[in-house]
Length: 341
Image (tube, rainbow, N blue to C red; front, side):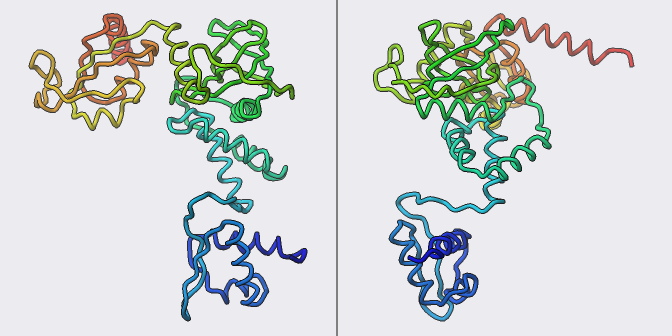
């Protein structure tokens, strides 16, 4: 290869990753080479694992098709910035479905972004005001990428941590995995000072710093295989021990499909049933309702809010503390609506 060949191959690959078929003559014109050179470059890309398909005839050309493996992608500046901003926006708000794999992708992308593009990504994000979620779980994506990179690279972390009562502490940990609940991110890690495993809410972490000191991951208590599934099980056990379990029994005056589309899956999946004691408090046909029977360790305030956001009539059969909270909340909202203007 000549010195210009690698640059030409990258430019050719960038063109082929556009979802269209490129005539050989047009590719040769764009790259200022002969059609014969294009054919040789196509062969080189195939040798590197890129599945380039050729069609014959006067209207034939080349296009990149899906292969059995994922070869490296080539992104131009605008594409790289768009992907980084999108991943930052999703990861920073713990959107359901944006899990640890997405955060790892963001960490890898930001690691290789040139300084000029990192500045553009930061500028775009700083100039954008996200719609508030209302639960205080907004996270600086740089914190997430620092934690993810340290966990992947098995590198010890230092950070400041604010507990639920506002106490500020400094922690040094061996990060194991990030866990997303759909509303918040948590870090499962071994706390070196306390010599025990801990889970940390990432929105309470600040000033994370990877120390550079490597470590061999310890086995999680009660787990043997290691990996993301073990971390999720450990996290679930840890959280179950912190908050009292709520055994939900809720009837909705709406079809199951309607409720499922609006109810967080962490609260469970309702089943179609008639209304409580054969009556439908919403005034609808009794056959159109559904009933949710599940357990969760979320706060009363959050569960009450999510039930109300389903946007249909519903009746809570239990637990009693949720019924009492909804009564107090309903009375407060009624007073607010009747306040003098």
